[in-house]
Amino acid sequence: MTDFTPKDPDFKDRVVENFALQTLMKTLGAQLVDIQPGKCEIVMAKRDDLCQQHGFLHAGITTTLADTAAGYAAFSLMPKGAEVLSTEFKINLLNPAEGKRFSARAEVLKPGRTLTVVRSDVWAEDETGQQTMIATMLASMICLLPR
Image (tube, rainbow, N blue to C red):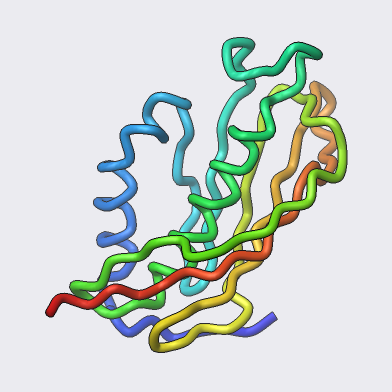
């Protein structure tokens, strides 16, 4: 695990403010619970209206959580005034997405001036607190600077 130094000392406030603008996260009931330099965790309770026909959390929602956590992990290391966008990702769905709570935990693998590579894992937690990894994502995030 590598420790990174953010380019913006106020990165936490910037990430929290930006996350608050994510209307999709509000719709999902997802919450930003941890932000560190190069790391992010987002959690969400299970909702039946976000599940597919077998009762599992829909793969699109799982992907959304992983992508968003990856984006904010990368964003935490970007300079003030920057914006972040996903440029590419690959997700592996490892286990059925069943549980009462879901957590996406992302960590920057390699920060770059333009592109940052991030790993984001999604975990399902059952009624006993047991956690199972349900997905893993490898993503590239671009740093967009004002012109």
